[in-house]
Image (cartoon, rainbow, N blue to C red; front, side):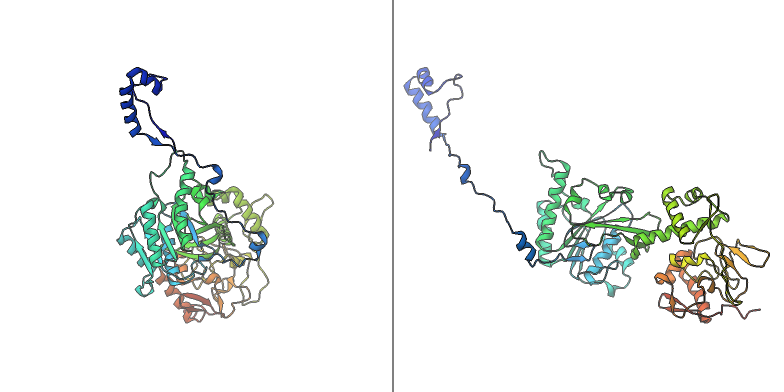
Length: 507
């Protein structure tokens, strides 16, 4: 190969070695050339394009792929957390750390989470925004009994950022311990900083960094969760994925995404979900237990039920027919949403409308014998998961309308007014004054033995709804239990048929 001998730096412009020979003479020019020769470099010939190694690409035939016996995707939590990389996000202070802690415990124990099956295995929880004291407090709140805490749940409150060293440590932890689920709370605490390469935009940087974490999950066929933030109100946007903090590179790279939606002072919440292998992407209803989360059925049904209850309470408080605008202002709901609910409720017989377009709760008596209560359309509240049959609890307004219902004056609202026929009109309809039991008005045709309250309402549910202590509810229930009108199955309440009521023998 030829060598490249550089000319002296002080040479004149556009000269060569012949010019240097004439300029300095033979011997000085030889000396300069020898010095330059000692520093000469060998120029390697370029490899022809056709000789460069080519990338090996995997190609398969469609028929072979169709016939292939491939492994189905696995789930840490069925239809929620798949194998690979997932994101759990919510606005700040909504309860996502409790959510992932409960998920970690469920997988470690192999018990269902939010009604979904789990694959039991070791779990690593990186709770990087907590101290050990705060994490222990949260753990005790979720699992009061030490015997229920799984031994295969490991926790850390410190971990390096997931740059080259952090990724190596994470890889080693999963390899040595065989974790089925790893939760990184939060991504912001571990995301490498200052890693943007020249000419790379934010989206490309996020894709590259997140892909490195995903490679580890894929390599060990495990599940990794990145806990992240949503912008305030972002989960209510039509495309809630766009509300993830940062670029869309995160949502574009992961295998599954969950978003928790709840107003901070609200009890009910919604879990939104999407993912590559998800077969069921319906929103899930959540109930905030202060602290912790509980499965609350289909989100659409839950929110529709809650909205209808709120609308009925608004109309009842008005004590006269009201316009849709009144309900909107009173409840703070959206005008279009309230109008749709009112139309559906009218079709269901829950409300009626006057000739001038105002809504009211119909007071329709149905034929009944002398020993039965007249009933009205509000019995349809049973279908709304109202706390049926327990509005008669002494001094407890468990449904949420004005006033309280006291035994033995049955179903009489504190703000009711008497009509000339001796009946009492109130938000629960028209009922006879006779004291033959507080429970019948909510069960047309009488109670059925062993009938459970819809959704299995418990003593704690009633206490929460009524805003009273559990002890107060238990005390009142014990009075009804003595009359053999209710039966307690653990914390659950079962209504029993009969016509007795507490205090019926008192003068």
